[in-house]
Image (cartoon, one colour):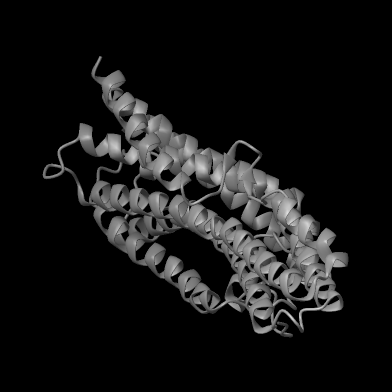
Length: 363
């Protein structure tokens, strides 16, 4: 169940270093510089987005625009909350690197690369469209940028930076959280499989204790994950739910055929990404209680069979400890339970939120 590789996929780990979420063992000037640069770019992008939305949007679209701005603002809160816990993140990654990686991690590096490719591609398309706008627009701060090449380069930098901050940065946090949850789920499932390999006769007390000790270790890791990511993941879910409502409301209030290509790209990308992000969090984190319950059932079945055939009453207390153990469910600050059934609640909330935005605006 162990390997000696990277604690998380290599490309994901590199991004964590660049954004300051994982401290290097050697605190070099480069590490501190990348942290400061990313922090400055993050704050600049959020302020710039507020400026553009307030300047460019009409009064009738301001309500969905505010929801859009809230999502960007929460990205700063996510960064600060994870930055505050970065020493704990470093220790967690050191502790979890020995746990066998799941098969799902093979796609993590691909997803990290895909996020950046999408950001670059969409930025090129949008910058090419925006360069034909009036020089007095908020995108260029009302300044004449000179020739089209300079204007395109400036707009490309701004648009790409916006996409990198949101949703790419928050997606990286979700990928990290998902990777950690997948490893723990895989470990628990392997323990369940190991129990099934034993016959009731061979599943003696020392083997039971060994498996329960390993399960206790992984539960300790889960408690650490809960402590570190409870607030950041809750904030990410809030910003994505808000973004989903904003994009849906925007679509309902505006004519698709008459809309600019930049608006179409943003609404589709932000909306789809926000929806999938929330669903992925609930789906991956929701696999943990399922794996835990499966472990309980497997352990109970094996120890119960042993009791019936071998009358090992001295092991009854272990079976009771496992069965009576409360279910472990990851949560967002004890406000949202990360279960797969919550996906339906999310969809219902999204529909209600969207209707409220549109009805309030129409009044």
